[in-house]
Image (cartoon, rainbow, N blue to C red; front, side, top):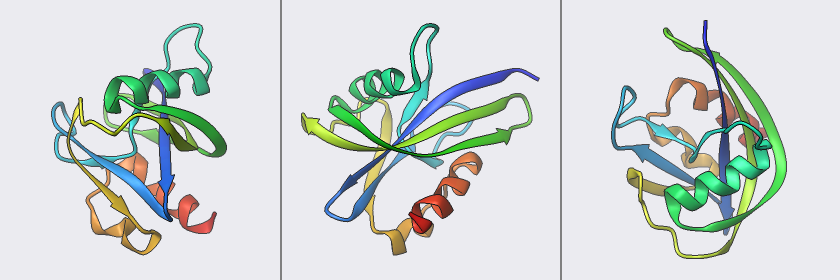
Length: 127
């Protein structure tokens, strides 16, 4: 099975976590933490900075590592490194997503997360 290496940013601000809703593709309408594929020669942290600039038009600092999720979707294996992030500059613009929400820890279960992202929720709640 093909493995896809991705990164996800858990952007924190004022005690809330940023969640995004996919606008296209196989998992359209599912909620996820923003991020994307790690390109050849990039570290996970470099990929996360690049992806969040491309998707949200913000510059972030990659703060603390949270977890790595290993998840088998029907057609591929996902390996996702998840990091807490802070916005350094820019105002969030949804360049790739259809919607977004700031959620408190108690609200994290209020959206329909993609399967791989659900295990990140528990790690956030424990953090």
